[in-house]
Each structure stands twice: as structure tokens, then as C-alpha cells.
Image (cartoon, rainbow, N blue to C red; front, side, top):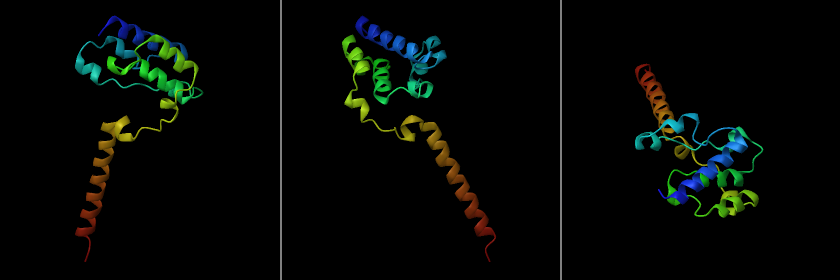
Length: 129
């Protein structure tokens, strides 16, 4: 990771912290050193802490602190501009599907529904005339 990408990321983290009084990947993220631990990190939307923030501003913060340096801003002025003026890329964003936001929770829910359906069918089969 180049110095520029690190600087852009740090600027995004500082902006996130100033707006929310928290860290974008949680308080424990600064202690992680392994790639496996970093892969488990998920961006915590600034809007959960500050519902008054517009979606486009949260989108700009999220882009600034992405874990993949290639998907971040390339220059600082892009972040500053996107924090000042609504970017259509973030304004038109819809709510991400549950499968993307929380895949483990999604599959747990599917498994639970499947288990319940199997129990109901099993009861019905054993108690039908």
C-alpha cells in the first residue's frame, strides 16, 4: 500500500471519527494485524450513529475508508468535494440486500426457516390419518 493510499484512508477515518465519535470498522479494528482478521471487518455506516447524515455523505466516508486501496479515492480533493457536494453515485444508492450486509445472518435465517418447515412437515406426516 502506497503512502498516498494510507494518507487518504487516514483522512477518511478522521472525518468519520469527527462526525460520529467512533471508528468505521469498530473499536477493535486497530488491534487487528492478520489478513484473516482484516477480512472479517465490515464498515459500520455513519448513519447508524448519526441518522441525520445524508446518505451521500456516508457513501463518501465509506469509499474513503475501504480496505482495498484500489477502491478508495485517488486524491484528497475528491473526498473533500464529495463531502461538500452530493455525489450521484452515493445518492442513488439503495439499501444493500441482507445477503450482502450480513451473509452469516442470512444463511442462519434460511437454515432456521428450513428447520421449521421440516418440523411442521414431519408433524403433519406423523399425525395425518
